[in-house]
Image 1 (cartoon, rainbow, N blue to C red):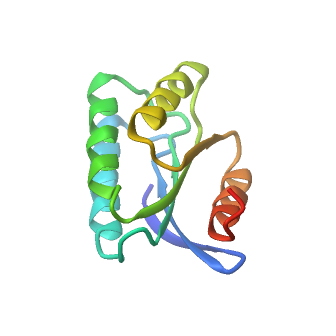
Image 2: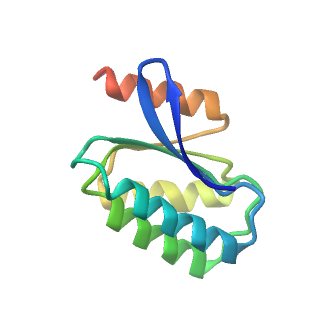
Image 3: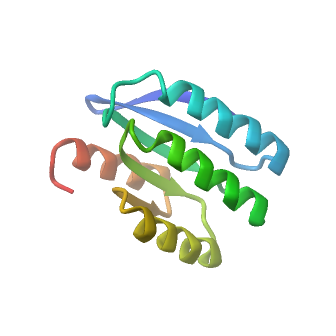
Length: 123
């Protein structure tokens, strides 16, 4: 999978698609996201990450934390899809701890709509 820029309504979203990847491949894609996002002005990026079907362990959680910290200055809002009940619990804890504007969704479409609402100042 990959990191790509997708359009939704009148915004651009950095879509990090990790769905179905092995953890090692996921690490490479996450680094690619850091490389792309760091090219944008501060607080200008709408980020969507899809982790559907990826097996998450403590090393992967640590990598997500590292990437989140690296991307924090650039990101205005983050939406995540594809989490299990257990990983949602972990993600919600990380969101509270970091204080970032982030939300978890069951579908990519719902995630894109939420990012659009963040852009419009409604979230």
